Length: 266
Image (cartoon, rainbow, N blue to C red; front, side):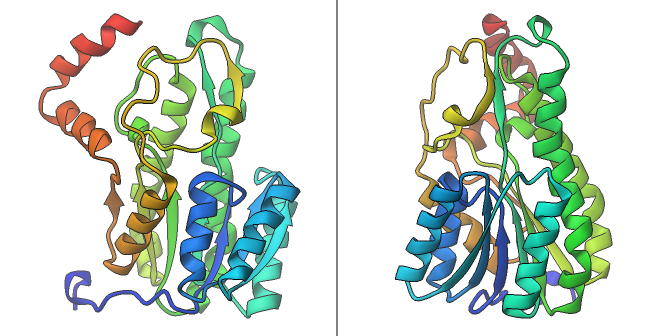
């Protein structure tokens, strides 16, 4: 029976790992999942903020343990998997949400900026999927969520490295989705547009913000709710932002027109 006819995925009582859970979309996902009585392992670098998210989850009657550290560290990822296995007996859902950005013209900086963004936005989630697969395939109806971006669908100036790494994450997701499906693991890519988070405070380098600002931003709670709805419906890709959807649609059907608009900002 094809996936179109499969019943909705149940999220109640799921065992979850969320990276970047101290703020923004990650924190909102943790709180929304708490309403489903999900048992969670929360990951982020900021231990204090991470504990605050865990407390918010506990207030809603759900369980959460924290693993503070850099997601690019294989030891930190291994600790999260160990905690999920020991505390909850396994893993049903891996959410790769952690990400960093940078602002400024590509030709005006050195190579370290691209390497750092690639490590966080592409290598870490890719390796985490590989490392988590034994636990995921051991359970029933499991899934991976990769938080991408509309800038993984259309590149824009001043965010070149971020765009490149999100494009790569989208490509990796498409490539491995059939492999994971064969093992009983689904994969959802979420491509938010501008979201009202602390992302601008989490850039590794800031040499000039994009001139279009943050118009049309949506709250992270909206992205979180759309993500869980997509998981239940077994979707593969969503854009939970009307303005972002419009840009991606314009890029598909009239890329030359979008080029003319964006070229002014070079």
